[in-house]
Length: 141
Image (tube, rainbow, N blue to C red; front, side):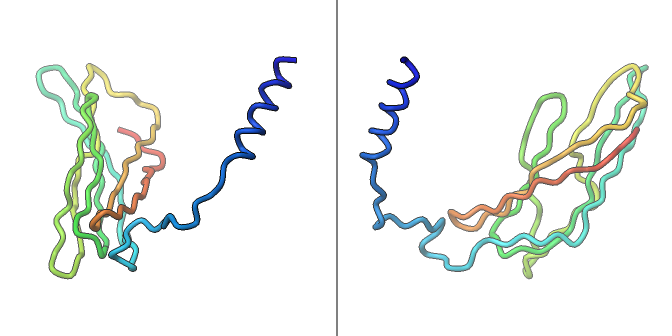
């Protein structure tokens, strides 16, 4: 009985809703060209080093590409601290960075098993943002 009352209530709510056709669904009214992000290279690699009986493991990304955006950022994290690293754009809106540290770990022993990392690349142009999720595939220290 309770289910019937809930379904009846929801059907009344949805029947009473109308769509306002005058609302624009464009992300950026002033810009007819959407934000683009083209990757020409994306290469993940790991390194490790030992300091004072602690082993540091790093996951790096080498990346390059082109965009029509004003700004390109990539998400980095390590030890729980997430931040956005801004990639430098040249005059032709190309970007390239050979070693962005995406994450690191500190331990007495690094894991010997395979693992994967991911990050988010954002291209921002005015109020329009293009987001690309990148996955490393299998990595190992």
